[in-house]
Image (tube, rainbow, N blue to C red; front, side, top):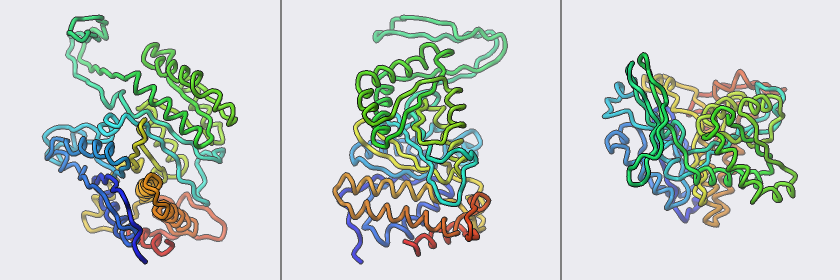
Length: 401
């Protein structure tokens, strides 16, 4: 067959460790035999980020703004141990945080449902989608160690540097730590509209949770902006579709989520979304079974896996041992990007290919062939699960495809 043509390249952001290995295999086994793949390539592996002083991450984000669609491999956010392991110049910030800041996007994460894998929460019958604000909070924070006897203040100055306000954060009698976070009204407005639009497109009610009773300015601003946007721009559209918007405290949302059957868009601030998306993914079966897309207010898309670089498996693979690493979420990053590229470029055959690859992946698992992490979760009458190593799993999907 002739390979499926692409009109416009997608931005390809390579990554680290075991997911970098899977990345190459997915292209080789599942995509390049069928698609005349066009990408603008950026190596976001930790050595290249260090060599370029992280400029490569910024360039990849700017390319996404220009080309409109990106696909990203999982990357390492270095801690002190990684700085030593990779001999880094410094402890570079999260590349995801940098990309989200430049695109001013919202992350939507949804579980990939497969017959035979029952959620750990039995009542969850439908997907719970996490809408994660992708700007600010601790991902763009400044922080410092503080010695006993020192004091920390929150100081605000005007554009000329003149002090407007000064508040004591804490007077330290002993050693401690301090952190400053920020957010932008404009980003929260964009976040609200992105979430309400996503809910309308997918016919989902919206639940927003924060802690405005404690954070009476910072968290309360999220509550106020969402209420304003909903009342002025979305209430009538929601009522017409028979869906609704609800704000409540984050701890109440967690309790409601555990009692619900799913089928809701759970809107979270940045850090809450980071943590809760991993919780939801694991409760549905595996971190390897969750899709993730960053959507900017002006319609740019960056698709990625919701999990990390699978370091433990990478160390085994590097020593020549086989691994059984779940590649489903990384496959979904590629299929999401290809489907969106086809949609935006008016090439339906590319979008159809992406959907067929997703279906082939799901049917492979449903027929009993899967990676080791799914074996304990899989129960389907008449089907005995078979554990496949990382590359063999991709080759089995290729047979189905």
